[in-house]
Length: 180
Image (cartoon, rainbow, N blue to C red; front, side, top):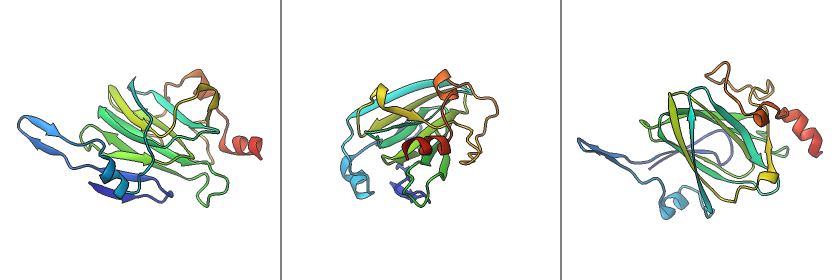
């Protein structure tokens, strides 16, 4: 497995070894010892799988008091995936990292606890799977608006399909003002 560090502390791109032949392919999507060697040590407690259509944008989500680390991947289709540093004490607060994850490159993204996360679907349909280091608690969820000019994400989509909740998320500045 190839591990690629990003400019955001702890955010890693993982390129697993894919064994392919005329019958198809095989890859390990998680192996505790190998991922621990890459610096991903927390225990995972929940696996999630979402399916979305082209143009759907989910995010930018986080949990307020019980932040989740997420190991994300796409098993069908393609997404543009984004992690945003929302820690006001971090030197990279407000910065983001984005990457295309798809069923051809088989890349994964490790997003440690303390980051907001979101993705938009680039293919007709995308199956998005992720492992979490803490349980999802609906009342603990927070968000940042997807098109916050301060963050400046260059989403490869102009008019995304959003949930009502995601469309009403605050900017990062508004979020940080509420907690200070």
